[in-house]
Amino acid sequence: MTTAVEIFIAAFLASIFGSMVGLGGGFIIVPVLRLFFGFGPADAAGTALVLVVANSASGATTYLLQHRVHVRVGLLLAAGGWPGSIVGAVLAKHISPTLFDGLLAAILILVALDMVFRRARSIGKREDAAGSVQALRGMPLPKALSVGFLVGLVSSLFGIGGGVVLVPTLLYLSDLPAHAISATSHFGIVLTSPVGLAVHAFQHDIRVADVASLVIGGLCGGPLGAHLSLRLQSRQLLYFVALALSIGAVSLVLRHL
Image (cartoon, rainbow, N blue to C red):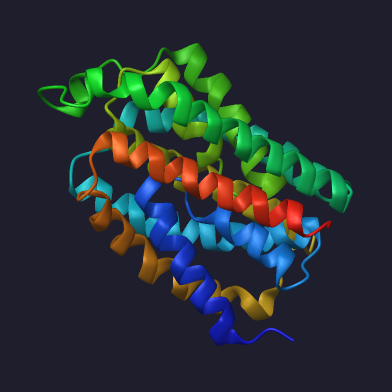
């Protein structure tokens, strides 16, 4: 039987780290819910999205006040992400636990390896971009809409908020510096994830008794993580992302040993 305090602590820590790297905290809390609290795939995804929404809302607000969000890109990502969120939430209801954990672990490991061995070396070339973030082009409309759909799909299917896909994709396909990517990722997630959350709620995938602890933990941890991210250099930020993804993947694999 889970306690409110245990859920709060897990959500608080996941929100701090998730906000630091722009991933929303869901990529940490989903393995925790699966491994330690016995949640099924759909319940883990649906309940984790409560944390994602709370964490992203608080973190995105902080990033907006810091003028680090590329608003145009965030809005385009959300437009593509809404239909993807609906599809992902429906799929989560029918996927097997083994396939759910295996696919999520594979995604986390692949993205972590790519960041460590490729992106960490090249990001430094644009980390000191001068002028306002809004002055940058960001990302072309077709790419933003396509990426948004994929982000919405992954967000609702796995309950991880989509940042695990969005952050590395923005690194590849946009001209934004690393800290603007984290901020814009949060902004896009907070606009997209409520749609998936609503579909999961309609499917009764949310553990209502744990919602309050998740929301409070997310609201407390999100702003703290956003402020802590200012202490990191862009290269360090990528290494923290890779470490976080690896921890989540290992947790998922260990559940089936």
